[in-house]
Image (tube, rainbow, N blue to C red; front, side, top):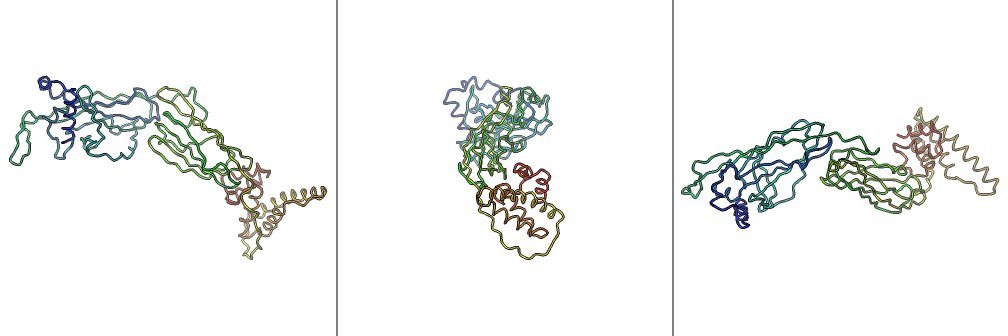
Length: 427
């Protein structure tokens, strides 16, 4: 049994189709209709809107009278023309997500313009009409009124059919019918400035934000992965990766962005900057709710953390191998500055330790400075410099080179000019 015959049988069984005599008296152009539903009348710039095409048809009448429009077979022999689906200023088409696998028994095909499309069919019947629908998504790019011509639906029908010697059912004197829907009109407003949160990043829709970490305990210098899940429907696919305030105590290594029509998942690799970090704080995400016309905020819960001391063992000091001298203009003055600053600090700590009768501290620093002094002017100077900076930051050498290195060095106690020169030298 064809999909059309199945729909006709269901409609007749449910007694939702008018009586036979009354049904035959209706004009053919009342046997089907076409509609485009935008969901609302007012929208906002940047919002993603879903426009739903619906075709309503009298399945028993189509099963008895409809004839094919084209040689290509279709479950529903109609062609819908939808001007609002065509490219136009102010409406930016969005890519449709891959449809789930559907069986032929749960789908119907029809012509949309010059293409044949297949949609899921659930056999909905309203006021005697079977309904099939198709949704297209668009991003609104400018304020104003967007008007598109009314959709149309074409089909052919015949009162009588003849069957030839091969058993093919052929219409006698087929007629074409075109029915017209109503025009589409969208009013698009700018997102309001009143009440806009300071950290608003353009998100329009309704959302929730959830956070989880892959560990609750780690060593200083180790990496943890924070997973943030933004769930909801809106324009999240169209925006850049959102930033979050409150992660200043971490070094951001990178972000993996996974997108879906109803969710966006961010996997963020973080390195704590000190053993004093006790939690990943609550993070907030501001969005504009177009249904209510107001801004709102969703928040995560804080995630407790335990960060133990340095993760890297003391850096061994191998004998400096003979290398050809390759003078670098930045390394020698920078080396002298670090040696003077850190060496003075080491000397003062030694004197204090001797006066108190305690063991002299910072043997590792002395070894690093000795190595740096010997490597100045050679190709090993850069590696030695990174090891010294790692000691200064109480971090693993692998985490030293980063965009925020100058700021971290300043926070560790280095003068700003020296911190900036050191950061520039290891880039």
